[in-house]
Each structure stands twice: as C-alpha cells, then as structure tokens.
Image 1 (cartoon, helix red, strand yellow):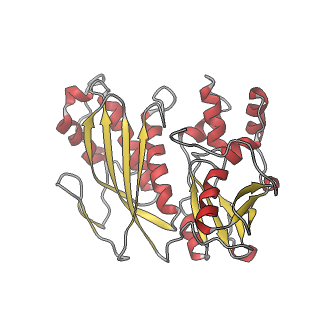
Image 2 (cartoon, one colour):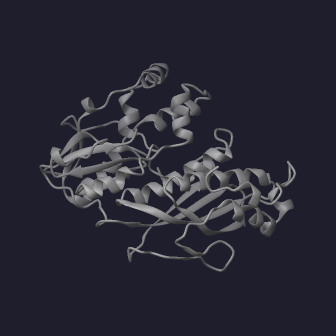
Image 3 (cartoon, rainbow, N blue to C red):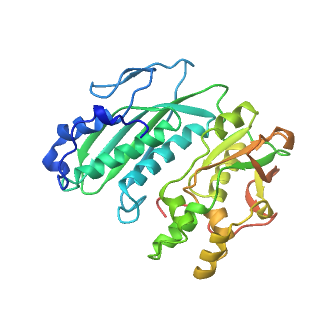
Length: 327
C-alpha cells in the first residue's frame, strides 16, 4: 500500500479499541508511521512544526475542511474512502493552480468513542491519495469533538506561472478535464437509500481528480482554471466574475453515460442537471486562447464571451447551479 510500510508499523490496537482508550499520543504513535516522507522533508511528524524544502522558491497553499454529516457520512463511506476523498478535495486545489502538492498537514477532531481503527483506516486513505501526486503528510493535529472533522492543508509548487481564475478573455474557449456529474449522481442515489448504479456511488465515495491535467494546462498556456468542487455552473461563475466575462456552456459537448439516464429516470429529473450543477468530481475547467491550445485529454465545452455570468446553450440557466455551504 502506497505510503504505508507494514514492517514499520506498530502492532494494531485490538479491534474495538476506541480513540479515548488509546489516548491522544497513543493514536499519534500509530498514525505517524503510516505517512512516508519524501526527500524534500527535513523534519516530518513529531516535532512542533515540519520543515520542508521548496525548490521553486514559492509555495501554493490551500486548506480544505470536511465535517461529518455535512460533507460525508460514515454509514455511506468507509474510513478508507473518506480519507481518499478528503485528500483528493484538497489536492485538487493546488492542481487547479497548475501545480503539484508536495506537503500536507492533517487536522482530525473525533469523538472519544470512535474506534481507533477507523482513524487508522482514514490515515491510510489519505496516505494512498497523497502518494498519487508524490506528496508527504508532514504533520497535523488531533483533538476531541462531538463529530468527526477533517482538515487538510496542502502545500505545493508550480513549474510555470500559476493559473488564476482571472485570466479568461472574450474569444477564448472553455475546456474540461476529468469526469463531471458522476459524484452528483452518486449523492442522489445514496440520499434516497440506494447503493446502485455502483459506478455513480463509487464516484461520490472516491473522486478521481485529473492531477496531471493541471500542470499540463499551465504548460499549454491556460489563461484561467478552476477545480469543479461545488458545481460546473457555479464554479465557472467564479471564473466569469473574476475575469469580467460571460461563459457559455454547450450541453452538446457532454455524452451522458447510461447510469445517468437510469438514475434520472428513477428520480424524474433531467440527467444534465448532474453535470451542470454537480460537484465533488473535482474535474478541472480551464480557458484557452484558441482550440489549438487545448491539450490532449481535455474536451471543449463552451466559449468565453463579452458580458457577465454563465449561460447554457446561449440562454439563462434556471436549474441547480451548485453547492452553497450556507444555503
């Protein structure tokens, strides 16, 4: 398993041992060895702070917070899956700047009666996801709370100039990398007490951000880029606002797989709503000066125009635009 070397791990606590029974420092003693350290780490977990090398001379930093009942449910996903998802959501933010994460810190708040093995499985999921981009978990914090809360701070670097949300200009094209709408379909399924279509449910449980596509787009000259975490229309709205333009999305650019139609038919909704308003897949949306600049693996989904906001097929869109944490 990536990031975990079994011979270096202490013996697992007996099944049923809770976090409170193991104790703060007992749990830390089990967590630390699960996180492999890269060559850029001078001081990793265990001291007051970590010390890492930044060869590019700059740091791209982002923090992502996950709260039980708001972002995940333990009855819907395993601890391993929640670890993967928590890390993916944070790592995707650095990817959206055109960078790659090298160091991560993790904060975990948990009830005392939580089984300690759950926390260890969560750590394994985080370690495995971080290994996909070559990142090391270099430290963190642990405390007690009434519900599980997970916070990841990610630090990375860009090989070329970072891609912001503010560079889109009229006449450019909008392209997408990664899958979009699958997690939203999975959430709709789980929210109604079902577990299939499995492909959609698994997409919600464990997103697959296109980690290589962010640096690829930056090298290709992307003018603006964003991680689609809340919803395609909502997140493109941030690009439109910051760039002072209008973005038009063409639904004909999307081919909806059979599971979309199956779920939409069962729920009596438009399957395109999952694509336009769904988040949690962590696809990347970017603008490029011309079609010739769009890299392999990206698909053109729209255009940048004069005006403001986001339109769909040239007109106003009155469907679900995306997630709002305080709505």
